[in-house]
Length: 63
Image (tube, rainbow, N blue to C red; front, top):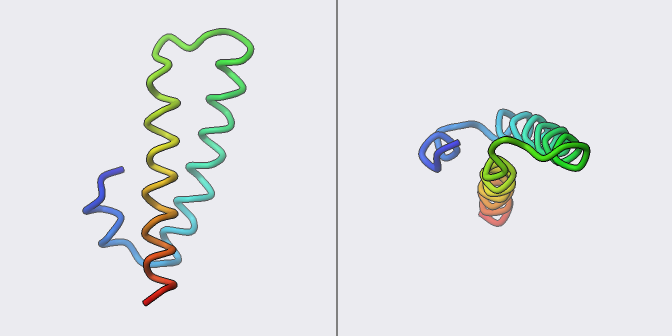
């Protein structure tokens, strides 16, 4: 997910996307534990997406 998409989304949408991203990350992590993923870089991209969303949510809470 791109930063521009995150900034355009509403807070409620971001919270939904955050829940989906965390679930997807945990699924990928479990699959990687059982048998190595073909593209382990996906783990990093999911983790960074979660961080971007959480950063935007925190930024909105502060304002």
